Amino acid sequence: MNYRRNNKRFSVAGRGEYLSTSDFIVEYYTNLDACRKFFFDMKWPTGYYCEKCGCTHYYFMKSKNCYRCAHCKHDERLFTNTIFQDNKLPLNVLLYGLFLIFTAKKGISSLELSEELKVNYKTACLLQTKARILMKNSNSKKSLDSSFYESDVAYTGAPSHNGKRGLGTDKQPFLVVLSTEQENQYPLYIKLHEVSSDSGNIIQEFFDQFVKMSNERKLNTDGKTTYNILKTRLQVINEVIDYDKEDHRLYFLNKIISNLNQYLLHVYHGASKRMLPLYYGEYEWRFNHRKCRSIMNKIKNYITQSGVATRKMIRESVDQYAMARGLEIS
Image (cartoon, rainbow, N blue to C red; front, side, top):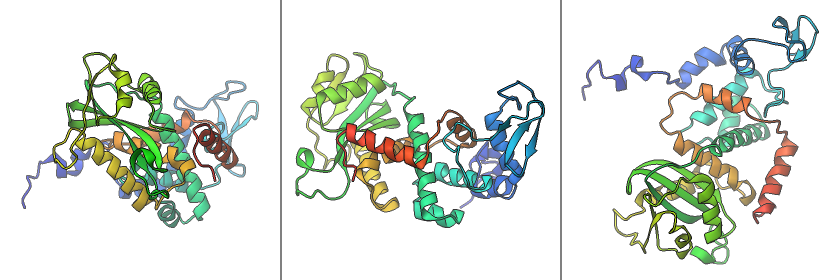
């Protein structure tokens, strides 16, 4: 097979800002100063300034791993008041871990991450969880805005203990909405959200918050009456679908649902119901960023906009969130 030499798809010069794993290792992992500068620029994008006296002169305290104001001697650390405030990992290991998590097309398990970073399994799990929180926070700022939508309430998790399927199952239901460029063609973005039940009021509340609606826009569903509540806001095409047909109306949506279940089963080998919201957030983020070529600036922004999240705070927050939505917390 021959390719033209000037074909940008196969040329290094045509990669733009794409950063491969080998590029990252050369540029950051083997250069601790570059990692420190990365996080320094994240905290002080316009240059260092003291939050107490406004002085722009400092010196680095290697023994304390902090930056000290040359005037008032105030100490400041890179991750103060962010999700990594209590970080104990070397900067190059932390940044490499984030790079692997955010650039993995199909995700990376905590076991794989622990082996690659040479850290213990619990440390890898905590880093994964914090990355998912960053992804979920990013998702919450995005709404769907298209002329065409597809939506369904699907189910995920281990095989149902009661042997029932559909509305009678004890699997975790989740609402998924897909925006497309044309009707049933060219998927754009998705929104995923765990729900307590397949309810019209829950669907309406979610659409009000995350989906741009008008009478000119179309919504394809699979015949569930719960979507009829949106008929005054959208053109709802609500008919039973023959899923045996290859070109049925919800083909792409069902492909996404199937991939999500495979992703949970084969990459992460299952997830507890209390943690599913974060896994949904990760899958949503990955799908919506599938064409993103440069992630480093996004990592900076995500950390900058984050808040403190210790292991205990994450556990309590996850449990409270799960209890409020009727999810199992054991």
